[in-house]
Amino acid sequence: MLTVSEGRRYFLSKTPADMRKGFDGLCGVIRQESGSNPLSGDIFIFLNKRRNQIKLLLWEGDGFSLYHKRLERGTYELPVINLSDVSVEVKAQDLLLILQGISLQHIRKRPRYTHSI
Image (cartoon, rainbow, N blue to C red; front, side):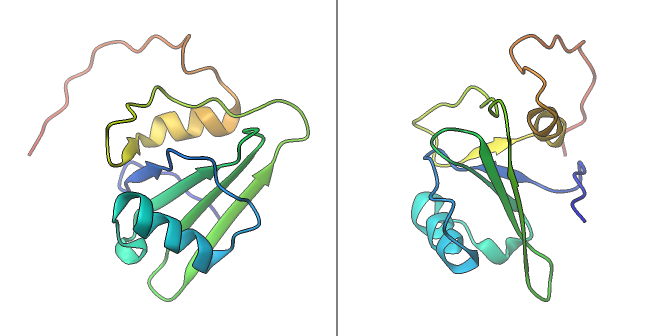
């Protein structure tokens, strides 16, 4: 079961992914694109070119889990991405909005205090 929480980090692939790729192929994309370790416990997000399919890959300590969803109608919205960044981190709240089909451009968030360590 997929659980999205603030306790994890979520990284979005900047390039469209081939949805035929499985665990090993996606791990190779992670290593090549961002130099990250797929075994880190972070969740890696992949979208296809038409943005109607999404895959989330995560290491759960004893093996990989892969969440794959194909929309029958509509597309997933991408957050604003800076192409010069090596990796694109997405907040858990934004990932939930993407999965639910809510437009990220029209959401207004009120200011909140965040404590950085």
